[in-house]
Image 1: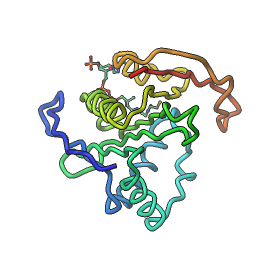
Image 2: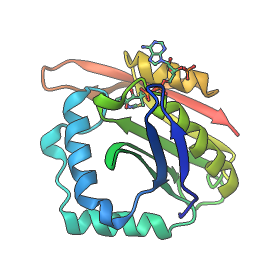
Image 3: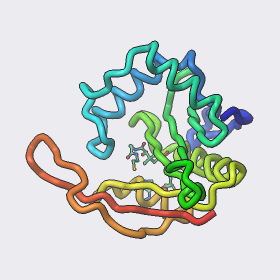
Image 4: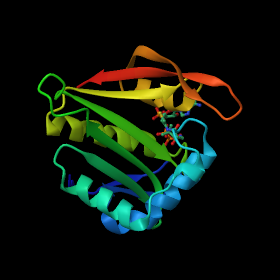
Length: 182
Ligand SMILES: CC(C)(COP(=O)(O)OP(=O)(O)OC[C@H]1O[C@@H](n2cnc3c(N)ncnc32)[C@H](O)[C@@H]1OP(=O)(O)O)[C@@H](O)C(=O)NCCC(=O)NCCS
């Protein structure tokens, strides 16, 4: 969906714009996905699993922009992608239409500046505006930074996915399920 840009002043004084992600952001988004996938073990993909082409990414971003039940928000600092976050409905069946899921990631250079908190705050407002009743997410066990942010924004733990991720070194990690009722 389309939504108003929001300007935020970061903890280091720089300006950040939170805005809808646009099809023209396709190549920057692919690069951002590769970088974030390599910087943290807490996202689903390894960098070589980011296989989107600019054309396929353009199409995906265009569809999300026109979808009134989905949000794809970009944080831009000095004209660069600092991070992205999204909400998507879990489905259009009437029994689950009240639920949406949230995802967020910033490139490491932009951690701890307040962008995560600002994006989540705005995204929760938009989720409510759309009509969702609750926002759900999964956070990999050990990702204290993300968990802290979610708790500060009012999410609570509601369960676990046992051995949700298996890493190339053969180790497993659980995912903690969190939810915020709007
Ligand atoms: C998790 C992530 C989104 C957090 O975003 P961020 O912009 O770094 O977070 P913020 O700067 O907004 O900090 C949010 C709050 O958490 C606190 N916080 C951050 N790291 C913390 C830590 N290690 N211990 C305690 N508190 C911490 C901050 O002080 C801040 O609190 P405040 O708003 O009261 O000042 C970001 O670090 C990231 O993209 N990580 C990699 C990808 C990832 O893990 N995504 C989540 C997948 S579930």
